[in-house]
Length: 223
Image (cartoon, rainbow, N blue to C red):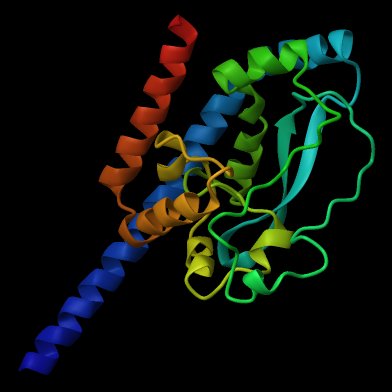
């Protein structure tokens, strides 16, 4: 009898999880499609402004790792000046022994010192408009509205068994770590928050994160 109850409980949990991801994906498709249409005039304006003020390229394409360690190309509006073509080694070369057990908590991605935010980039970053093209990634199923931040393949390749669990869900436009103010400057904290989300994702948590992110954006606009 206890075995039957246990099996029934596990089945209910399995169905609940699958329904959650089904409706989450459905919401991603509907919301991203609607936003892409509504934001089309703004997107065209941004394209023209970047082309006129900073020149090409208008978009930035970055290789990222998504759900189940699948790579995809993430699109964004360009916010930085065009730097020199510098080949960066991630992880640091030669391979440090501290990476043998996973990406260290203290790891920090160093930006190219030769590039800075453009005039348009400052405006885009303030309102997070640079992420508008990522709605295409959401619509295609490579990303979600809410989830962990997309990771670089060079870093994800060195995830340990615990860190790799953050790749069990689709990366998001915003997420638990982002609304907490944690960025790639604090890799250990970012992983901790992302794992919390991965293990506790739900309709309620997604709504709270999306609402918080929206409030933060609106607050920036009014400041």
